Amino acid sequence: MAGPDFGFPFTWFRSPLSGDVFQNTAPDYSSTDIAGNIEIERRITREVASYGNQLGTILDALMVLAKDADRDDPAIAELFRLIDAVDAVKQAEGQSAGERARDALDSLRKTDRAAYAALVRGLRAEGDEA
View (cartoon, helix red, strand yellow):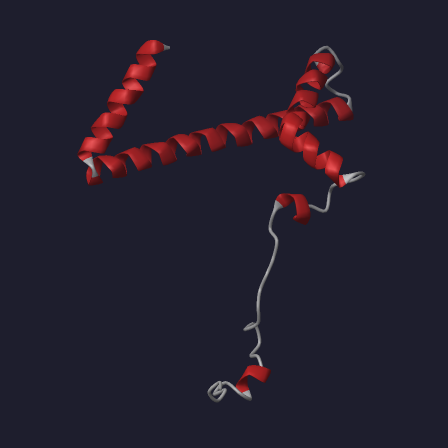
């Protein structure tokens, strides 16, 4: 025989925001900009190229085609503005990644000198092979 349910009647009521929470945050399901067949889109981005890689390839091709075009044309000017803006973000993020790597190495050096030394030796050996 089971004991008394001491949660009753409190199990009937829930305070605001106290219920079960489930939210799928996977990009495949939360993206609202997928048109057409979602399974095809998933396979393309998983097996062929991400949207960023696809757009990068298109921008590179357009830049080659537009290099001799009239830069006063608003569409061509916008294309080059877009390419410059994307390159600026990539460069800034690349610098940020370098800064994060430097901070991580500095932290490793301070907390685990042996691991730091081994990592530096490994990186130098890889550099000598290149």
